[in-house]
Image (cartoon, rainbow, N blue to C red):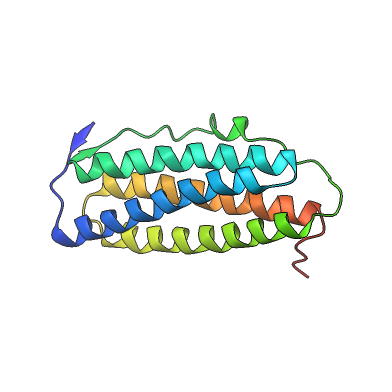
Amino acid sequence: MTQITLTQKERTLLEDQKSHEEICIQKYKDYANQAQDPELKALFNYYADQEQQHFDTVSQMLNGTIPQMNQGKQQQNNQPQISQGQTGNPTDYKLCTDQLMTEKYVSSTYNTSIFEFTNSEARKVLNHIQKEEQEHGEGIFNYMQSRGMYNPK
């Protein structure tokens, strides 16, 4: 772990990210309970756990420590598999659409934070989190597309 002294701007950006992660955790947990499809429940629960890791990482940074990130694909291998399912139902469609919009927004806010940080190690950590946020969006997109909920044509 590396120590970091944050600028006021960096601290403000991290406070925003921490708030976003907290909302993502709660939404994924709530939506896992509301989802009709067991595969979607599993996907949302998996993402809630990853968002908790993001929250913990951002909290560490706010406390002046840059954690070492596992940059490998080990976590990704544990992601629930998405099968070719039946046509999605309206409840799952709404949950997925909202979470996809949320992931797009959160990823974009990480992009801004990455450019504003002066410490390259901190940038790498934020970039790692952003990459996982993008993977969440991809997982939701793939789920939706496999059930006829999203047609990118």
